Length: 369
Ligand code: F6R
Image 1: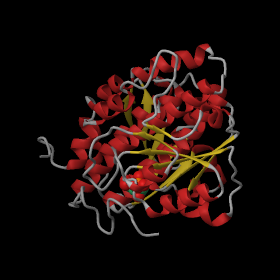
Image 2: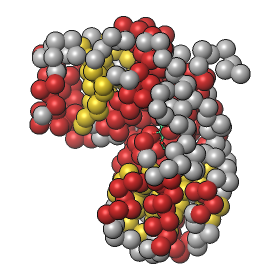
Image 3: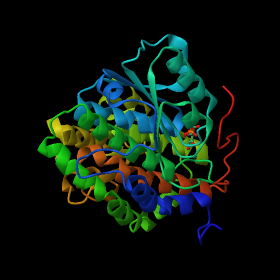
Image 4: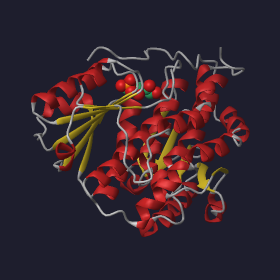
């Protein structure tokens, strides 16, 4: 049943190219128009949207953070992202021209469901991105886009996370299209790049043996830090969350630019620091800034584990370990950079002798607030 893998989680990591392909299947028309599964909204409702909230929990929240970068960039609509348990209790400003995107693998997460109900009470439009067909969250939403990641058995979310990110890209492109934002060459090119994502994930997966070996060497760490910038920041948060929940090792993700504002004091001799490096082609030289961050932590004794694009040799002087991912446009990079972090957490937990599929204190679906 685990398809030859030691854990469901490894099986589900291996299924990610398919999960991404299935989430795209039949949805990315040549005109960029997205086919939603259920729509109880008119095109006019969607054209009137002037603000987007993305509301979710845990790993699904990290998908939301990535969505913000893509949706704002492609649509120029302001996007706020918030954990569901906070959203409802702070009286957010919502009205009928607000779109609230709720993301939930299970469709049953109580915090997210309560946030959805609050949004609907305030007359906001609710779009659900969900993996479980017919679950409560999509049933109560105005529109639904299902991720087709297939059933996820391991408690830690992997393939559904990648599928959620893909679904968020589709929502961004759809909003851009429906609002008549002129398709720039960049957006047209992105559609082509999105079609290539399953192949890119496949390629990352062929290179995971050294990552597993690295994982085994990290099993005694007390703390592991994760740094990223731009869309690599949510990826760093996700890498830290996976490690906490599976390996019970203290882990934190930071925006690389925040390092000097405090977290750098944590770096000690041998502290493992995982750095998600943006593409050398990314805007505003964030790449160079992250390379400097690697150098800074290394100079303070960190053991640097660097996730960088193929051909990015700028990182080599400061990297103790380099994990390569295929060249990907900046906004799509999380689809490839997340994968080694999942494998790393899984391997570290396994080496420490823990049940990777059933971590202590956690449940697959959290139906209490
Ligand atoms: C992490 C994980 C949790 C869930 C969170 C939301 O691996 O599985 O953080 O992502 O509980 O669950 P859903 O997406 O079902 O609402």
